[in-house]
Image (cartoon, rainbow, N blue to C red):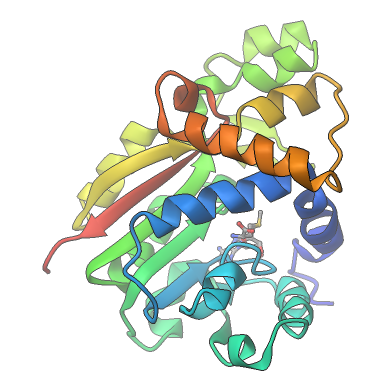
Length: 265
Ligand SMILES: C[S@@+](CC[C@H](N)C(=O)[O-])C[C@H]1O[C@@H](n2cnc3c(N)ncnc32)[C@H](O)[C@@H]1O
């Protein structure tokens, strides 16, 4: 294990437990549908920066996209390789792994430009999102997508309130950081700030979505949701997808998904 790999101790909790929950299943489904609304038809190239164990980009490889998964954590990349090995050979051939910091993505992919650059659940772990966002925008081809998912700074009181931690909730209305579900300190952004950041780097914001709402509320208030009840999970995911697209529901989601398109350079 790499001593600097702070994600090594979180691999199983994240890749096996978080994604095996109803919330994990809903998130993958909702984000996949949102991405398909904007992606060109396959084949097309996708760079997944901080791609982790491939939960969001392997479904794209299955759908025919050529995926480059870049991550700084050797342990997370090992997990991704193990998960990929369970998929058909032709899907495996469409996935490339790169170990690097996202802040050096352009150099790490040798200047390649992609039809879509994803960065989901990563910015919140960085003190300053700017260097990463600069690289995401740079790696997108002209007309390519940039897709960012991160914590919503406007709803900091939601989780402590649902967990009935009222003092924490009162103190969290204007908070920008909290200890997230993986036990790691996270920082949140606003749609407006991130939109401005990508606009300044040649990427025009197209649309933004929420990700979870009702499953988050249910889980934090103590309800047990059964990930093996496929019918219920599918029904839940359909409701969450609809909520993710509309006001006021999307505004209350604890994470948001911003999609932008790069203009001609
Ligand atoms: C919460 S996981 C999200 C994984 C994946 N994007 C997903 O949505 O399932 C965060 C990932 O970001 C990676 N990461 C964190 N900081 C990074 C950086 N500066 N450059 C590249 N990867 C990074 C971690 O190793 C981890 O795999």
